[in-house]
Amino acid sequence: MERPRPFAAFPHLRSAMTRFHISAMQQKVARTLLGVILLTFCIVGQAFAHAALVASDPADGTVLANAPAELSLTFDEPVSPLILKLIEPDGSGVSLGNPKLDGNRLVLAAPSSLGTGSYVLSWRVISEDGHPVGGAVVFSIGMPSAGVSPGAATEAIDWPLRAAIWLCRVLVYGGLFTGVGGAFFLAWLAGGARVARTFVAGVSLAGLAAAGLSLGLLGADALDLGLLSLAEPKIWATALSTSYALTAFFAALSMLAALWALYSRGPIKARAVSALAMAGVGLALASSGHAATADPQWLMRPAVFIHATAIAFWVGALAPLAALFAGNDKAAKPALRRFSAIIPYVLAALLAAGIVLAVVQIGHFGALVSTAYGRVLLVKLALVALLLVLAAFNRWRLTNPILAGDGRTERRFVRSIAGEIVLVTAILCSVALWRFTPPPRALADAAPAPPVSVHIHAERAMASVTVSPGRAGTVSVSAFVVGGDLAPLDAREVTLSFSMPSAGIEPIRREARKLDQGQWRVDGLRLPVAGQWDVSVDILISDFESVTLKSEITLR
Image (cartoon, rainbow, N blue to C red):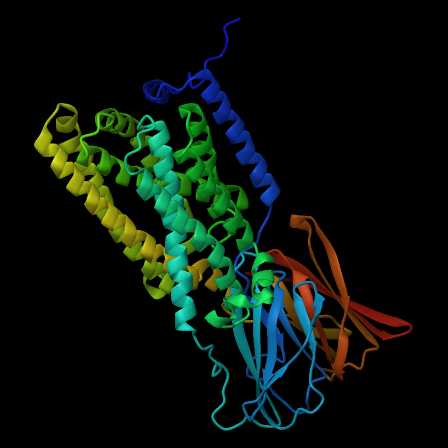
């Protein structure tokens, strides 16, 4: 029986790998690495998208006759509360303490001495993607205060903190892409050449320091504190409780492995360690963030992993290639020949993964200009287009003359690579802005959906059922029940039931609470799937008489 040959189905890849002189042992290391990657994806598991507030009690803009006994915030996913405070009409703030957690709902006891006027319920939580999310709800008791209206509460921006977060994000990207990618290039494509090693090590060290500092900055941002709070233990404890801690951990391991590879004595060890470092780049960026935590997870996490490692391969090669040719190193031409053989496959993977990520995050073309996230993406795409044009010029106009020994073309090639490095730096600086811009996908989840209603008629009773907001997620349901004479029906009990047989969801039953004669309500009901739901209203009129009303309602 013939022994199967690795990559037999891919002759071009096999040819390229032959030029890399990949031994059987190194192929075994690659297979082991693939197993580690798949195992880590299983360990990381399911994460959710950017959290969004879907309901509050009191609702935003509500004017109440009497002070509420409790306050509640309902999100589209479980969150971790950070700051919850009530801003009173005179501008003073009252901390609301620890809330009760009821699934996706945070329930808080309202202060006992609430008087007439407008109040702002300010909240700040950590979502499952590791990012702090904040907002405010305005409600009034008796009558609104002068000059206060729904949406009037805005969150002040700490620009020094935001600038520090952005700078650390750029440095981490530099350490992962230029540092780790550079170490991989030197070990695998440049035959262990030492040129540019100091530069690559310096970028890795800067990224390593930034990865640690970024944790503290995340904690300060999450708790709405400034740069001077970095010495407080609670800042770091908060950051370590988020999913970004896993990103910082993998990023640090990846850059440490790159440093190890740069200064390893044997070429085999350097290649193996640098390959592990490259895997760490993908794992770091696939562990948290907007793109990695979007649905569907089976597609988005691998897409982020592929996109990140492909960027590191390409970007990491730039500085060493320029240094090799600038110094007339004998390893320059062989390294360029190997790089040229594999880069088309890397670029194909990079672009395919990037398209998938952009389509899921943007959702529709209008969001490219109507949202901050989309405008940053447009800037990035313009810069990437310029980068691809310059890379194509290098490959089709300069590479062959260089390999043929044209010295003047080598100098043009070095200048062209310097231009690529400038464009890459601009791209990383723009992409780091995404830390502050939720994607349109998350904004669509947060957008309020209008309520949906259904009128159900029967001979003995009728009901008007309203679901708010009118989309899948956590909702409130109100029912107005009348008798055959159209007068409010003084029922003893009302039970609401929702089911979706097509999705295998059995009836979800909740006993409604009575607000007034004929008016009933259920809060915090979780209807997790969009589509058509069967709704049933069971009305207990007396001990001897009941009526069941049935209809359908559609949630977006």
